Structures are given as C-alpha cells and as structure tokens.
Image 1 (spheres, rainbow, N blue to C red):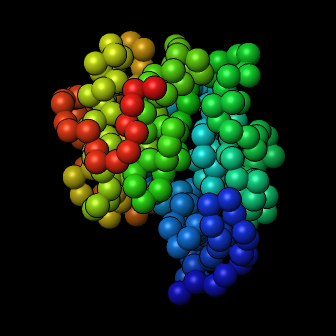
Image 2 (cartoon, rainbow, N blue to C red):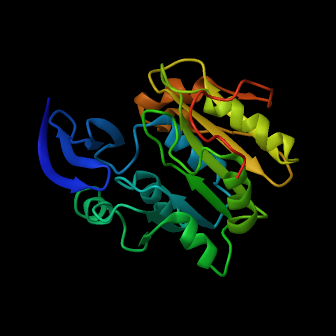
Length: 252
C-alpha cells in the first residue's frame, strides 16, 4: 500500500511521488513508470543503481545524465564523490530535493545534456547515462556515435556507464550498442542479470582498459531487493546482433 505525497506536471507526463506505508520507501513515477525506488535510509532498492555506483567507485567527479529522484546522486555524494546531475525536466530537481533528500552539495543543472557537455570546459572522471523509457533508452543516447562522442568529450580518461531497460518488448539495445561501440575500437562490456525482477542492462565503456570488472564485496549490506540482481550479473563481450527495429539508428 502507498500514499501519494505529490503530483506534478512533468516534461514527459505527470509525475507522482508515492510512499510505501510499511517501510517509508519513496517512489518517483512518470506516466505510471517507476523511475526511482529509494528506501527510507536514502539507498536505492534498484540493483542496477548499485552496479553503476560500483563501476564508478574510483571516480572522484561524476556526471549523471537523468535525475528523477536522485537516488544514485545521493548515494555517491554520501560516499564523498563530487556529483553533477543534468536533467532536461524543470520539475525534477525540486522533487528530488523536497521528497528524496537530495544533498545540497549535489549540483543540479536543468538543461539539454549534449548542449551542456559541449559548453563544459572541464571533463569528468565518470559519466552515467540513466535516461530510459519503455523502449529501453531515450534518444539521442540510442546512437553509438553519440555515446562515443560523449565518452571522448566528457570523460576521455574515465568510465561511461549506460543504463538500458531490457524488459519484454523493448528493442535489444544493449547487445547492439556494445557491438557498435566495440567496432569503433572502444573497450566495452555489457552486464546482464540472469535472475531477479529488474529488466536493466549496464553498458560500461572506456577508451581503453578493462570494463568487465565488477567487484561486489559487501552484498549482505545491500537491500534485499537488489541482491538477486547483483549476484546474477554477468559480463558479456560484444557480438554482432541485428539493429533494433526502430527509426533512425544511425551512428551519429
């Protein structure tokens, strides 16, 4: 059972903030789609969020594209990372701060992500793209050329991590993007979970160096909802798969 805490008109549809009565966990929903599930202690219940956090654990300065409730930003900032969130929806930041306790030290920018990165003078140690919908990943991040350019401009010496929804009916973005990016000479690993209720894949991309290392050393300290997902994550090397049946899947 849940109770509604807030309702806002968002750029992509109505936003609802809900709270579970039995444990105080808070949910950020857009058009009925769950974007954030944060437990009362400020930790995400989503396994993919924990996986992304582990992959950028050594990155002091992190950019997150796609904010929603800001659970990943909160978890990273709590661990001492410098975090910038960029989200195109003007309604998102206030919801994250008012209802999800986004720390004040997290920098939040409301802007088009690619325009922001083009104007940005410095670079980050890691970039996380968490911009998904029911089709798997939102444009323009469904294009290999955009992902490659983002890596080179925003974190050329670090990691680019992309969350991809892989639920039934969504195009096979993960394998296709991994193969395309590998063909550009980048180091690429796609993590897929073999068990659990989450339909998310994690794409880890670097200019060079290993991308298949995901050391989960404190599994018992993570939320029960995330454990099955994390325990069953497996790295997959890039291989050729057919292009997803959607429009305009060009490489730039």
